[in-house]
Length: 399
Image (cartoon, helix red, strand yellow):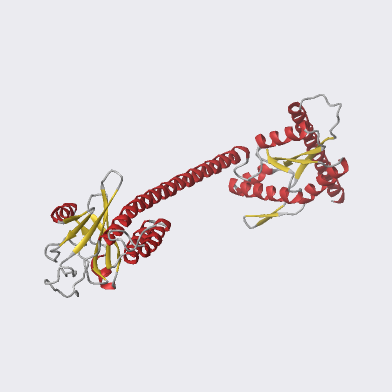
């Protein structure tokens, strides 16, 4: 137990404020908060009312980063920089009080900027050697474990107006030691936080780069498997989807679609008009099928629809819907134009006895739908020619 009455011992009543001050410093979050907690801690556990905290920067000079005392002290000193050489000369010429340094002739002319603690209102009484004089100052260096200077506390204006008792100097010395460790810890914490923030930024950039690469790859994959003009699947995408469905033995319908007399559109109206017709045909095909069905452009004016998971009657109904999609004229270059198409259906009932590999069966289905489409096209053409001859004979007889 500390005996408050024994000279040279720190009184118990001073240890409690010291403990609270050290706790406040150690629990402060961030370097700036730690510096201010140090300044406030000195003012709370010692009689000194003016406190300045200076910290060694990377260039070796000391920077005034916190004060405790009147507002004019903060305004006059906060942010000032003291050259390291001037500080060392000041410490060398000071009177050693243990680890502290006492200055007896601290004036504006002789003191480095940022050290003087602005105690100009103290009355000068040179005849009383126990009184604190206006030109006095007390410095408490803060050092690391190796003795390297990391900062300094400047104190002035004791509340009782007297030179502090030895136990006050001991309290200030103990606090300065703990404050030095707190500064080092706060710096390490901020450096770690900075590194973590930088690392997180690098990780975020990496994530963005990976996401962008995935987007580019997906875009290239989409381009490689889709028709540039219509946006429909191309033969590569069609083949992969069809093979996958056949491998799963899912019933499906393959409908081949070939535009009739499409060459006349290009010849009479130009390729721009032809491209417009192809885009319109693609839109009508997409509107006629389900969202999960595959619609592909496999040639200049050839399209294929693959509808999975449907029965044969549903497949026939789908053919009718697609045929109806071509029954309405389209507007091209201000002209109403009827674009018809020949359709061919091949149906896969997912027979387990089918021994063909999915790739071979896919080619077989596409070929079967293509052949049926051409058979219908020839039949339609023959019907058109017969109708034309009949109309011609009827006109001749009537004439």
